[in-house]
Length: 248
Length: 221
Image (cartoon, rainbow over all chains, first blue to last red; front, side, top):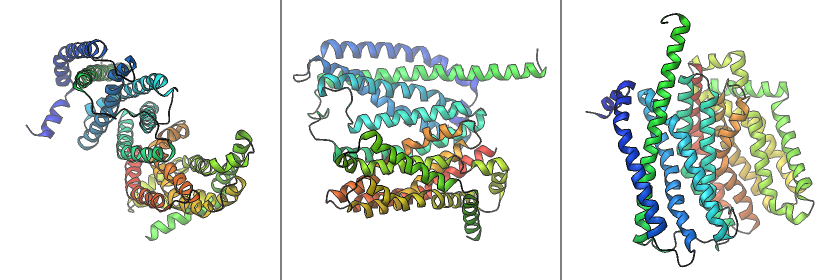
């Protein structure tokens, strides 16, 4: 099976819904198990940091959330390419459905970062390069979602949103680079850096487990949202047919 | 090429005769900058410290102010459809519209910026660098803004959405624009910043018309 026949095969919503119904329980179970295990490993098993004490445990939510925030944007950009090139409506729906999840992950990363910053840096917010670029990522998500919401015509909305997602994905590395540059010029070097020493296995393992759990959770919510969107569009077209008197 | 020049002159002439876009953007630019000393306080050392940033942020906002009219007027009177359907590549038309927007909106800002820089007590060494940076960076503002204008053309409350979409994309231009002036004032070479600004402008000059044309075609369907 080539890539394009696979993509076109998924274009059939009924087939897609059947597939997603098969995947959903497994993904949900995996998400619960992995996040549960990750929380246990992170909160109980992993040792407290010798400098930061127990506050370091915020990391097990913060870092995976930040990874997922960027991963989701990559998913949106990828789905947008598929939607633009192969005119695949399900890819457009996937990109639309992924955006609020990505925005939520970004917000979680920002809020946990801020909560972590208070005991560590003595302030809720530092204009650190990472925090700043995450904040701008959040604005990109908000603009993307606002564009979807404002354009009534779904065909035009999908195209416009896909173009914006791609423009944003080209821009993101430039923004990241410029914020890093800006930060090194303006920021005193006293800020505690997370990536100081190499991460020990007792911390790395729960981190990776949590990241896998977050990914499974992402898959679950994404499939739910795609399903809801497909069903909403079906209801919409059924209502249109009813209004036109085609069916009663 | 002929069509390009003709379109630029048409848009510039429209902007001049309506007397709105350019002068309003300059007026907005001046007022925003005058508001800053009133808000921050008249202390000259503070003003000198923030002058480059204030000027650049005000330039971004003034550019944004006129961007929602970039395609909207043509959309309303129907000439946008003719432009999309014409034999001239749409990418070139977008580039012409951006050029006209830059000439009527950004260029006047560059002209008044040195005077306002003096008002903000900017180190006089930094003023030529400010002008270079604005000259190199503002075309990118028009070009990136065109993408947003193309995406939001014909949408209700498109102007607000436009700023939400475009402003995050302006971040690199702002950072390197201010960085060039600060580097000059602190005795470092502004060249790296200026080169990166030029690179951003050249890159957006290639990529933005293409994305804008795609957005305009999507809006016409």
